[in-house]
Length: 493
Image 1 (cartoon, rainbow, N blue to C red):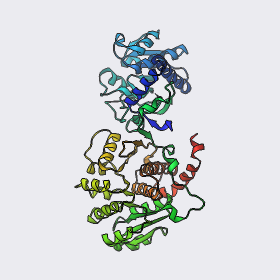
Image 2: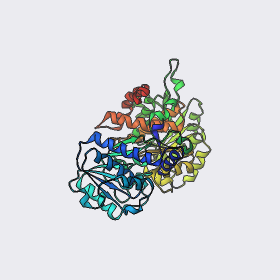
Image 3: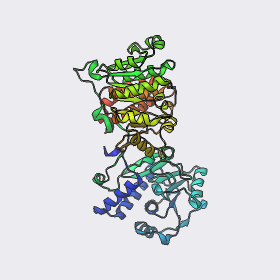
Image 4: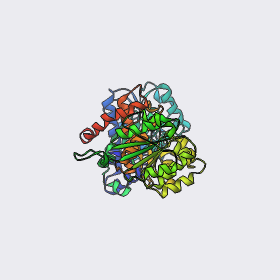
C-alpha cells in the first residue's frame, strides 16, 4: 500500500527531516541516494564518458556522490557545478570535498564527447523557472539528444504539479527516493521522466505516520478491498439497479453508458428515455431495460422504486431545462448520483444551485473534462489543487478527466490516474467511464473508490485493446481486466 503513496515536495522534505531526527544521518541518506543512481546507470550502460551537472543544493550533493562512485569504477567523468563551490553547505559541501577531480563551470563545453549526462542540478526543489546557465545547459542537452539521467526529478519539472518551469531535460531515466511525487505522474512533466525508479535510501516507513499522506497513485491496491465481487448466492437484485437518463438526440451516449454499467456488474440497468426516442433505445442492446419517461413527474415516480440504487445523468441529455430538472430530481432522491457532460454544462450559468443540491443529496460524482470544469469552477492552481478545491466547493467527488486524470474528494484526498493510453481520445469514451462509475456505485461501492476504480479499469481496458479503439470496444474489453483483478494480489506481488 505504501508504494502508491505520493509525497508533495514539502512532505518529502518532512520525511527527510524525520528520518534524520530518528537517527539516520543526512550524509548517509545522500550517499545512499547517489549510490542508487550510480547503480541504475551501471545496469543500463557500459562505461562511457559522462558529464555530471551539480546544482547548489542537496541535489548537487547527490551528483558529487554519483561522480565519485562512477569514477572509482573507471568511468570517464567530468563534473560541473552551478554556482560557487564555497557556498555549498552541509552534506553537499562534504561530498564536494570527497570529489578528487576537477570542478568545471556549467557550460555547453562540458557536454562535448559525453553521450551520457547526469542532471543533479535542482531535482524537485525548484520553485521558479530555469534561467541563465541552468536554462542554457538544459536546452543544450535536449538539442543534442543526449542520454540524460535525472536525479529525483528532471530539473525544471515542478514536483507537485508536473508543470515545466522554463525548460527541463528529456530524460531516459529518473531515479527518485523513498516515494514518488505528484509531478512524476502529471503531464507534461511525466513525459520527460523516461524510466522511473524509486530507490530505498534508508528512510523508515514509519515517518509516513506523522506526514499523513493524502495523495496517491491510482491502483487496485487502493480500492480492491471494497470492490464488488460476485458471491455464490447472489442474484441480479443483490448487485443493484442503475438508472441512466437518456436524451432525445445523442442516443448513443446513454446506450454506451448503460452497457458499460452492466459490464461493470450492475444487476439491472434501465434507460429513462424520452418517448420520442423510445424506439431507438429499445432497438439497442437487449439487456438494457428501456422506460419511456415523458416528464418530471414520471421520472419521480420511476425513482420511487427503492430498488433503483444509483443514477447517471448527462451523457447525450442535451442542454435544455429537462436535463437540469432531471439532475435536481436525481439529487433529491438521495441516491448515489453520477453527473457527466451535459448535466454539468447545464449549470454553467448557476453552479451554486447545483452545489446546494449536491450538499443536500447522497454521494455525488462529477466527471468533467477541462472545459466543463472551467464552466463550473472559478479556481486556479495545478491540477490536483484545482480538483481538491472543486471537491471542497461542490461537496462532490470530482474526477477531472485527461491523460493524467485526477480524482479528489471533499476530505482533500487526491488520486492521480496515470495509466490512460492516448487511444482513449475518441468520442464516447467518457460516456463509458461514467457508465463504469454508476455501475460500481449501484452495487454499493463507496463513491471515491468507485471513481478511482472506474478510471483505472477504463484505462487498463483501453491499453489491452490497443490501436483502433472505439468507445464501443471498452465495455467488452473490460471483461478481461475484471478477470485480472481476481488475481491482483499475485500480479502486484
